[in-house]
Length: 228
Image (cartoon, rainbow, N blue to C red; front, side, top):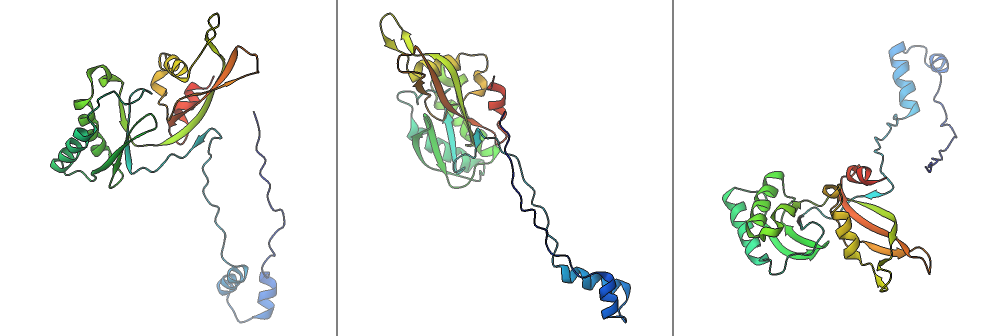
């Protein structure tokens, strides 16, 4: 474990005048007034800012005026009716007095990004999610996630086979690694922001390291579950 050292300025601020010196300079002032004068001379007190610890492998996510639709780390299904989805979402949001509307849609993060007028609240997300599942192919209904972008955690898996079939010389692909991760018992914690990246350990090595990013909370809850 690496320890991060925090260097601080050790020089002390000059102290204000003592009560004794103030009493000699202004003998007619009351004790209460002397204390007030001393505080004024010392200047305003500096309050410590509240800090929150951040993990080295987790960073803040992108703009939250969008709702992400992820298909278990896979691309948007072929023929997915994006225009019908947008119209259906806006109609449903209008009927339910939702706080936001869908402005546009685009392919992003290996899924779909629906740009919104405002940050969607939980009620808006439920409405949009219902419409997504309504138009989503049956094979994807139980593997689709709809929600706001949060934070991103950066992880890696060591000693991944570099060859899918070493006898035939067939290299493993990002899809192979992604599918293996999604088939693991911890798949519910893995929502990729993009495809894994494979880096060969050595020039002639048969192993590589897979780097990948996942959607996570700012405290890195999913990453903590996956690490190790």
